[in-house]
Image (tube, rainbow, N blue to C red):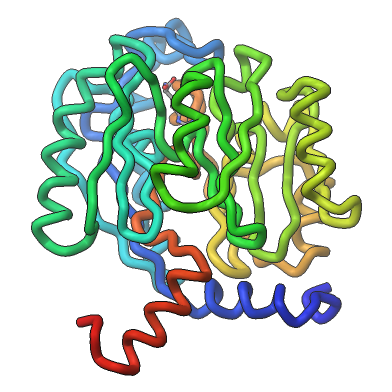
Length: 316
Ligand code: ARG
């Protein structure tokens, strides 16, 4: 399958394949299920065996971090904060593109307490030169970071989900603030409350998605941009297993599980699968992608500019 790709597409593959990503994770020391802000959050199931689930969460998180490291990526960690049980879901803290971070402002008061920790941490990343610029949206807009802003490296654009968590007004700003193309998709079901639980663009141009998470307009938008041979349709079982909530780095895909149909389709498209089950985090409605913030997404245009400047010694 990889051989069938056209030359331009291969370029994208190769750059992402050999690149070591910089990922941010938050250890689950204070991970807990203490409120319910999405339909997957299982307060009763969690509390019946809370100690066991908390131990499992630590083991699952460690396995994920070790998987990234084994694949050659760098994992930074932010200190977990007491009383912020969902802070493990790092995808939500911001969206970072070409070194510019657009920080989140959460819809639910339950998660707004995480925001000062992210402001502080990103100021530190800025001081260390890991991010170059920090942006915020106006206070009346809500935006939940990479949970709703999902980068498509093949199409060089963000898919931005809105209505459940990110507001339509915020979604309309993401591309402009981050300086890249973006298109918006309305999230029509409470169950699929962030875009990242229902859509995953892959480095070779395939897009995995769950049709029932979108309305006719959203589906038409997806179908306009994704050729039929690049569409990988996921099922409600895949979504319930949070398998669409995957992280794709070059040819590697890290995912929680999913049906054999989905796994076969991903392998047939040329990807190597690394399965890291996440049942404890799924009790809070999150999985692999939610647990991971990618700090170094770069547009191809920026990468080319970097290469040219690099040769002339203007960058670092
Ligand atoms: N309990 C969290 C919430 O409802 C889960 C977040 C999962 N993150 C994600 N990017 N989907 O906000």
